[in-house]
Image: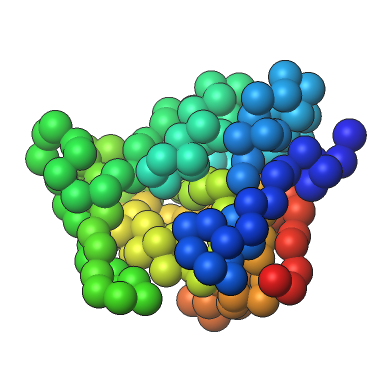
Length: 175
């Protein structure tokens, strides 16, 4: 079952000219969800990983069942002000302004090997910020994992330039 065929494209969302790649059609399909999680489990079952970190919010959808299947802990990386205990954060640039992601200060121990998961890699800004945040905590990124790569937007290259391994289940080129 090709995962890419179960991903819906929504033209001109959230603004004119953007082709939004919507994974909700993949996730609502029980076979699509199972195949997606199973493919990731197969990839990482023998990898040396201590924690699986998911980026808010769609990254949580894959990171939690993946962590469960691998017998590892799940770590949420959230937007500013969403975590209840003491946090450490990292600010990063957006197209217009800045944003901040945070993680609990006790989420990752120094030297732990972390798999970073999100639904999609576009420009790579959020994923790069998450990698830096995990690094601040002393964690080591094993790989950055996504369902979708939009290679024309340069996110994969951006992460690879910083020495991170990147994996995606499928790509959408162009528009």
